[in-house]
Image (cartoon, rainbow, N blue to C red):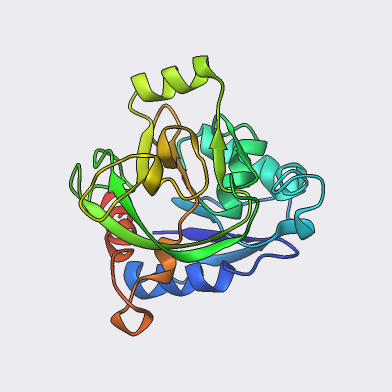
Length: 229
């Protein structure tokens, strides 16, 4: 299996996710610099978290127009799996690979803590290692994680089953009290229509070992390994 991690100026989770891919999937990913204009044949591309280009203009706005993202979009159109985490989710929405946008958190503060998520759909290459309705725990670290889409778009993604994860209570209840950043419908992670692209604000790569505090992120990488090998 061939994987790559995109590296932008300001990325700070690129090595974290590279370690997760190497350790769990057994393949050392290519680290692709943002100025690259050619991408080799790949099975998986990860757009990692961080503060690409210093989050100037809007989070992910400048990165979405970097040379490498033209190739990422082309690969995604061919069906290559693309995983965007935190800033990566922001970049994917800015690049038009996912609908909606990520806005400032409702409380206008940076949030850094573990959160609980309800798995809305285990029917994808990213989530087949989980169960529908399962509650997992991932860390978050973002200031602009408030997912927004207009009513028409929101109805479409809900109707097409594109919601992957929602912010929830430990018992799986989904309500506003569990909504850490004000995201519409508690959306924490979202697929494209073909379920070949996933963007999510929480960080599965930060919980892949008991020494890191848990292993709830492991099934995501094992799911991809099983699907793409």
